[in-house]
Image (cartoon, rainbow, N blue to C red; front, side, top):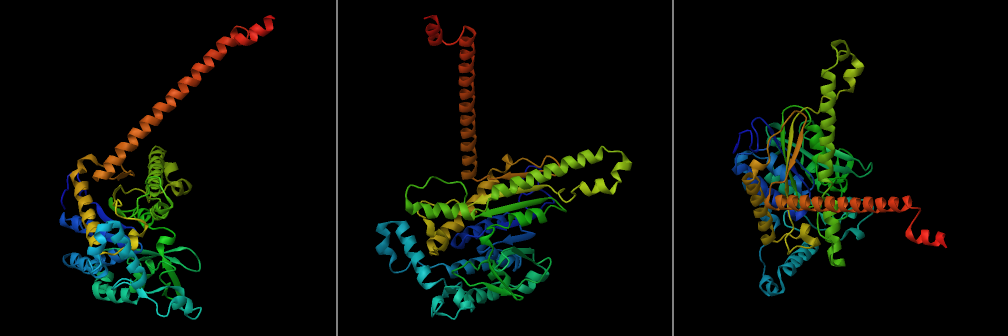
Length: 427
């Protein structure tokens, strides 16, 4: 690994976990992240994904290390489109116009090796059939997975793989994990079956939709599953950023809604788990101070949650939208945008390792530490600190003003009321 000192990322002996969020065409960012991590010798022991993250996860976990980058490259080159004959005419109108043109092409023609329009369309299909429940046919994705993923390797030798999907009838999340069952192409396809574009996928008699309907990231599943055993370093690769600017028009609202909806409360999940770890650590400290006879009491032992004893480091890598992108960014599959997303993933990993000294180390058992060490992440953190300091200063000033006003009021009351009231009483 690139760094095994106490201050570096990753630390010696940590299990490496790659967590990949859903986000369609933005998923090339995750491929760039993987390339940069692998280049530094950071190879995942466990990969978890939702939607496009599940596809990338399968391409990684379902191939030997020396083949993974080639398979990722093949997939992303296949699903992205070249410049095309119309590009020279559209360039003068701006990059965002070109991007929207490619997005429209995706909607009308589908994506090679991924999905194609249903013909005849879903509204003209017999009700109750799968073809009637989706506008696109995802058979090409199945063929692509069978070609690019070695499912025999995935289920026998590869890193652990976990993908999530939503049961259409129960509305609950289902996790398909290579630790507990054999993973097939259907499991990956189910995780990315986003309605109403894609029809549900049948697995063992049940039907499933895209896991992003409930949670667009497998982070919560991974953090609770990872609470036991060795220390963990979780590389959380997000494609939507929760924080953003105020929309300036109706054209910006859909884009902002999409970011909020699909960011999936990443920070909330890590903060909540951090609290659970802290409570577990405090309970253990209190238990250690009890007399031996009380420690052996089964009722007291039942109160201890010994699962949360591993130390976790969560490193955030979050794609930041470019100025050219609009709400169609997750279904705009142009070759140029794909390469931009891929390069952004590589760049953010390099930034993270450049600033790894700022991460520090796990200070004690049961501690969850969360970092965003990219240039943009550090800049945003500094702005949040300045904003918090300014808010605290305003709050102190307001409290001081209220206290001063209260003091003046009490002083006036001590002289028999306000000056105006005293003059009135004197008459």
